[in-house]
Image 1: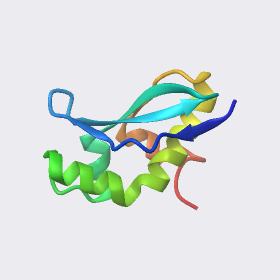
Image 2: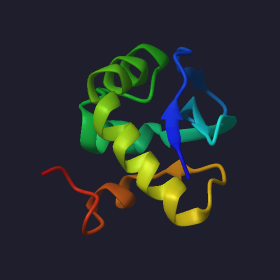
Image 3: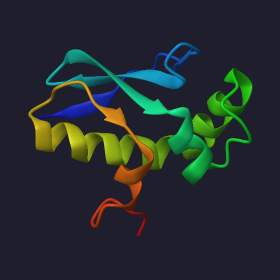
Length: 95
């Protein structure tokens, strides 16, 4: 399975308090998300507001995408919602 990430800008979803972004799994788009809580807990977002979460996403994009790629690999390329606890799972924390 080949996983890359689209160059599209992430999108804030105020209803779900999440940021959505696109992964490409074997060239097919898969919408993935990270919760505002995860962005606050692990990437320095000061609040669940759009500006704060998008800034935190931009600053943590490399790690977010790395964890997302691992999750996509494990679930066969299905959409992923990255929650705060996932970043504490053994093997998915930063080196």
